Length: 478
Ligand SMILES: [Cu+2]
Image 1 (cartoon, rainbow, N blue to C red):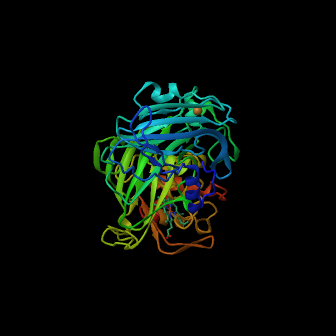
Image 2 (cartoon, rainbow, N blue to C red):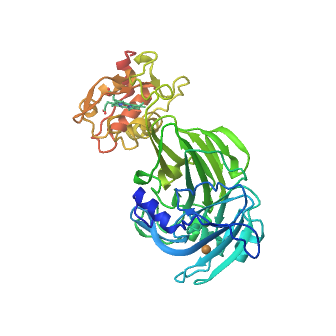
Image 3 (cartoon, rainbow, N blue to C red):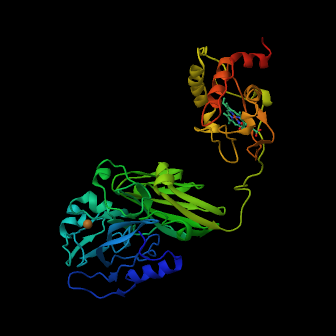
């Protein structure tokens, strides 16, 4: 969700304003402990607070507001988000192993719902949920010691839990190991989640939550950082060639497991599930619902890298896409770019065959023109549809249309030659030039007659019949 305008610069200023940016190290001894007190620096995605850079534990104070507010889910689509800190995902919290975290949860007076927080970094009942139940206009406090290092999800756990999560109440807390993580050039915060709305993907207006879809685990949206496009275009992550990048990846769910992948990169290192286990040279890593992963890679060449959930319909049809825009000098030894494009004819045109190549089954003999059309449809679906498309409409720039094709209809019998011998070189179809390769098809006389008769009688074409004898006479076999 974006509340602020997407200017990168502006967002950064904005998040600094939202975040409590007081780097107050007050080594004052308090009554209950001897730890120095630090106000946590928190950031909005995709920014990550700086490393804690301490060699001793501290008492870290974190204060987060819960809100209920309308925001952008996709272009033209709005949603009532329930949030930690006014953003989805909520603020990134960064502490050190052994720190005492004093957590304040403030529920805004204009909220309609109570909220609480379950941080997976907490050792204790409900991960803090039982101690942080907060009515609208109230504030609560609890403390925990961050015993285990790692990257942890936090989320609201107020009933109905699934609905609070589905509406946007999750984020990440990083507990750095005592010695910290190795230095990298850039760190980013990326969190996947799903949205279940009344209406389909992209349906405009303010879309309410859809409980039936949530129960069926069938979301309309799967997104990174709370909205479609939150990491694209002007909001893309930027990096320079040669830099090392660390992504703190979380999955708020509420239901789906992510197959997190960056197109055009290989993860040099993955902190599996956000813990201590290191894996290397990984293409896609699983991020469970309510889980995380830390991935690191060096960017060697310029270009756009695309973050996806490799359950790929989610990426290209439901929004799970982000971009890392890498600028800098190319390195043709690592990646050349396209070096050649041309026509590929390994064994000469006549040998280019598609269709039931070897075991050509005995094709049924059509007893009437109607049957020829019917049988021809099956031949078409198996042998032609992939290129010429379901309605014979072709594909702009690649495959000419068979629906309303002047090339075909001016001389239907010529199509026998096209099928049996294939076709290549420039042709004009309805005034458009095509210069592709139509492979010869290995079909029986009956099948060629059937498919061409089907084509001549479909999609508004003006009819006609091709007989098997026409095909046979072209072959010169009768
Ligand atoms: Cu809640």
